[in-house]
Length: 86
Image (tube, rainbow, N blue to C red; front, side, top):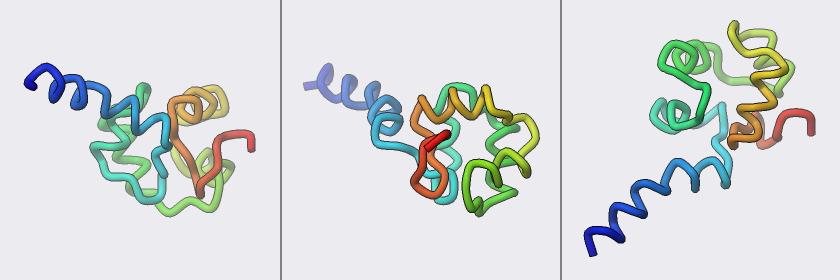
């Protein structure tokens, strides 16, 4: 039973990425669970919310440009429900 609980806990960030993490409503922990989002970048995201779309996020959050937006989107980050480039 312990192994099963550990596996569920370990898979939680993967499950979040597959479902999607909404930039406008995600918690700090949910955002930090995505690869490429550290505490400083998450703080800038939280301070700049809400975002209308990806171009709005890219314009207002320093440290996120198109290359990193593609990677974050592939990891599950969504803005207004949309993946980057949709």
